[in-house]
Amino acid sequence: MAITYELIKTCKQSGARLGRVHTPHGVIETPAFMPVGTQATVKTISPEELKTMDAHIILSNTYHLFIRPGHEIVRKAGGLHKFMNWDRPILTDSGGFQVFSLSNMRKIKEEGVEFRSHLSGDKLFLSPEVAMEIQNALGSDIMMAFDECAPYPADYDYVKKSLERTTRWAERCLAAHARPHDQGLFAIVQGGMYEDLRRQSAAELTSMDFPGYAIGGLSVGEPKNLMYNVLDCTVPLLPSNKPRYLMGVGSPDALLEGSIRGIDMFDCVLPTRIARNGTTMTSSGRLVIRNAKFTEDFGPLDPECSCYTCTNYSRAYLRHLIKADETFGIRLTTIHNLHFLLEMMRGVRQAIMDDRLLDFRDDFFNKYGLHENDKGF
Image 1 (cartoon, helix red, strand yellow):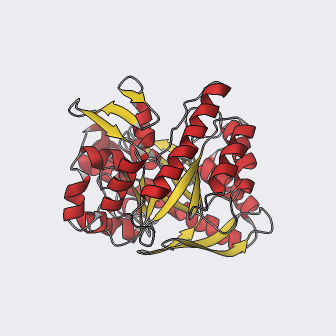
Image 2 (image 1 turned 45 degrees about the horizontal axis):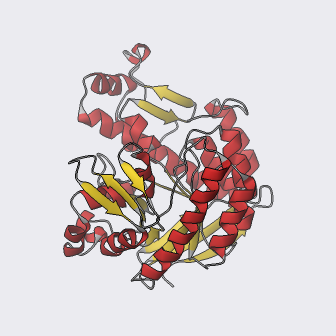
């Protein structure tokens, strides 16, 4: 089997899991945050810088690589690892979320989804079989089953039909997966915000014995407390001997709450996306560096941070770069935000080892300025 999970310790205080996911390209220490490299690159960041930050795994996007440059180009390059010069694990999503986001440009059928390229307008088609073909060509360590991500809000009947299609598509993905000894295929539990539908989806998918399981259809606009309720319902239904992946979640509070609930892997564009607007995560809370109050602030972005940005540049300089639309400013804020989250997850893993993750969470929230009814990045 390409992917195996090793449980190291369960936190006595919280029930969170400390573990390792073993892949063909190395070990992922969990709980882990995965930086997103949509188009075979984490925007403005080199693979060497990601290694310096100790990123164990990155995520890349099947839809975007299918559109450009095309999976056959990546195959001819020797696979995604060689194409982008990254020798650690890679997870690729199935493209389903992106396709279903094109609500006015796609048509859902049982066979798959017809859609138009957001670049050329050309008519294209993704199905479970095509998604497997693309991801087999990319050669990622972990690949995702093609699923239908229901929007929020959505009525019960729509979500039920959607999750049942996701189950049928998961069966087709298993049948079409050509490299099970080299690449682990994860299924995606759906069911919207309906607990009985989440239970149905989890039961159907776990009966197929995938190497790992993701929870999809969250972080799509629902309130945080609703997301946590769905996790409370769904996580206990997933096998304890396999990785659990919460898709599209990357705010500090959600990473902590997800870890407490037994999630092993997270991904999100949040740290890189907000960095491009000059918004940063610091040990004392969110900081918008373009604000005028930082014009003459010559201290580091975060005095408690050891990243390249904080050890070399001032808030005033960062504000100048962001206001001037300089790419270097975006690089520096991106480096910091990724370092911040990866360092936070190191703290989470140590807190699990020390049986004090709830204390770690409370200390973090108090310092970061997050309260029970006021959580965000």
